[in-house]
Structure formats: C-alpha cells, structure tokens
Length: 219
Image (cartoon, rainbow, N blue to C red; front, side):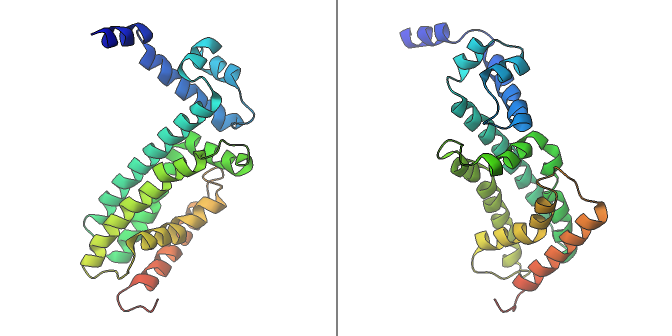
C-alpha cells in the first residue's frame, strides 16, 4: 500500500497526457530542426508547456530522442506488418501481387512524415547521436518489419511460388530491390517521385526479385 501511495504522489493527474504532449512536440521539433540543433526550450515552446515540465518527464534530450525514435519505428513496423499480411495472405498472381505489395510498402513515407524527416536528419547527425540509439532504432523498426515480411514470404515458398534458403535475406532483397530505389531517390519521401517513375522502379524491382527467387533459379 505504501508503494502504491508513493507512486500516486509522484505521478500527478494528467501526467500521461502531458508526457505524450512532450513526445509529440519533440517529434515535430526534431523532424523540423534535427536533434543537434534543437533544445528543451524549443520543445517546451512547441508543446505549450514550461521547460521544467519537459525535463520532469525527460531529464535529458537523449532519452527524449530515443522515445521519439522508437515510438515512430514501432508504428512504422506495425503498419508494414499489416501491409505484408494484407498483400501476401492470398496471392493469386505472384508478380502482380508483389507489385501491389511494393507500392503499399512505400505508403509509410507519406503516412509518417515526421518520423522519416528524423531519419533523414540521422544521416547528417549520426556522429553526434547518442551511442546505441541507431542500433535500437534498427531493431525496433527496419529489422522488425523485415522479419515480419520474411515470415510471409516463407508461406509463398511453402506453396512453391518462391525458393530461397534464408527468408530474412529474401525479405531484405525485396525491400532493397523494390522499395530501395524509391526511398533513395525521394530522400525518404522528402521529394516524392512522379507516379510513372515510382511504378517503373517498383515493377523493375519486382521483376528482378522474382527472377532471383523463382523456383529453379540459379543463385
């Protein structure tokens, strides 16, 4: 009982909402300014809270960055898991269905713009980011999405539609071949490509993937 009472005393009413306000504000600020060029004052101003409130929930900026990055990564990975399941649950035309998957795989670029803006900043700021943050982001986001895609590609292999020894590697190649070109050319969604260019890149990537992993293909 004493522990519960102490916990209630330390946690003011509405703190969960305030904490989330801080996270949302930090996401917006980090996406706009980058991590190295923003501070607690910027986040407080964005959230409408005072600096003491921000530091109450997040005593240092590194912890706030980690929270923002991992929440975004988990949300993107969850969205991609649903996309993989929806597009690979009932494959009737392998190449056509993989092209549809490829286009859907790119939708988080538009659906989570602040997260991918932060990812773009990563390239320029990575030397200044706290140790371990990038690895935790990769685990919570890209690697999780790749594992979920791999599980669903295994079903296609079980049906004899694809052939590979390593489903994780096959999933990585799908992402690289089908989505990688669009992601790179658009700078993670910052400069969206014309529809015809996206369609051509996705179709060519799928054709290469199917050629590589069709049953009987030499690898």
